[in-house]
Image 1 (cartoon, one colour):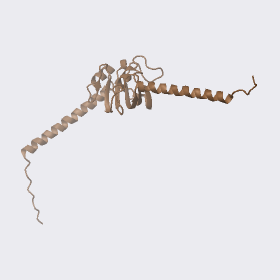
Image 2 (cartoon, one colour):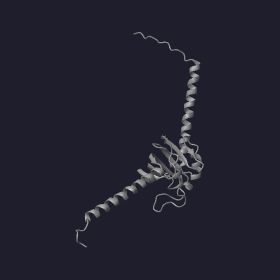
Image 3 (cartoon, rainbow, N blue to C red):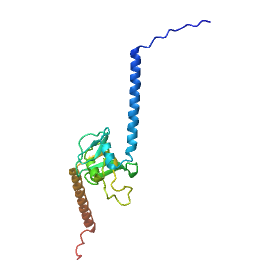
Image 4 (spheres, rainbow, N blue to C red):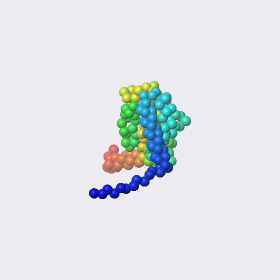
Length: 207
């Protein structure tokens, strides 16, 4: 029985160098991801000030002049609502530790500008079809005066996931209200006329 020997080709030096470079990059990437994961886990135990300072530098997070932090999860289309407009939104609220203090509310009509300052500001950044996540510092949330009976502690950072499906301008809302009032007045007038007609005129000779 004969065995055919297959000669092995020597590995070129350049290939060995690139192999070591790739290995070094893989190790560096793994260490970076592990470090970021450790930082993210540790951030849960940080106080609010330290957490917000760290969080402001995370990818995709934007910070307004007031200190509101937000992330665009899904971009919308068209313009944004102004204070006084009515927005149709889905939203959920939770704390940094994941505690849900506001279960998901779907299809809620919300007057833009109402509510806590950070939420009011955040809605005016959105447009139709947009989905955002807000991080509200305590001064833009409830601060030291959370609602009684809620699961919100004093001076808590509040996190909201919000989807804006549509909004109606304040002028359109007023016009709709005026039309509704006019329709109600016309209906009342018709009912009064019908009641008067059903009573009818008194027969001749009757006082």
